[in-house]
Image 1 (cartoon, rainbow over the protein chains, first blue to last red):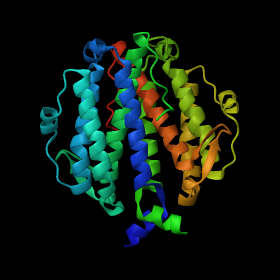
Image 2: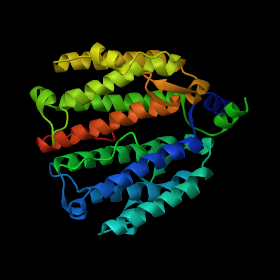
Image 3: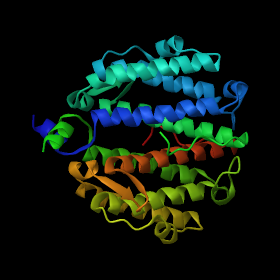
Length: 165
Length: 165
């Protein structure tokens, strides 16, 4: 109870505000997917890296596969997510994206401050407090989306504005 | 008071934990600065973008110039930060970086949950709740550091591991 009070007294962001923050980032990433010519989305990269479709699939797997574990503590392994979320066209990729958007809206409001402080193992493999697992998921999306920005620039395409969410 | 209670009941991350999260990202970015050959740090980019030294200076200006405004509500304009933080060698860049690390450690613990919910205008220009200004600063660093990762990969250099903070 003392921990909860301390935590409560020093909150940076509320649970509803964090969802808006997360979905704002996801809306920007969705526009980044749309900014690529479809063939380049699945084939183009810089420096031997993965094409943006694969980076976007990783974001989908982490968020879509992760949200239930974040909320409930019940995790499937990560390999199961790679099998579950597959796309070979932009339309398929966007359909997965939008399904994860709904999953986050449905499940995230069930999380509690107490749950976010618990230690857990994401996908049975990566250990840390649940807030850390959550931040890692969002930060990994920001990280890989930014790499897509470089791909777009090197194709002569202007990426969406970073500050528009 | 009701707002504070609601906020308190739904905290995602505490003020001390957020500093550790932020400084973890900054430690990773510092290693990214070190991964570049010094000449490439100041000259190399992909797709007509800014070299990594300029992206790192922007991070320094936003965090170093921003932390006092975040805590106190007193902002200098952004142009003043561009003048204040300048570097033409890696050693100068790292000295600025490390000074900002100390500034964050000194000032961030003075922020309160109530302050983080207030509306403010970062550098007198960008309006939002203070937690939003704070997240924007960290997210912008993740975004630009990831672009440095692509520069490194295209130079044949392996970037530091994203998951090590």
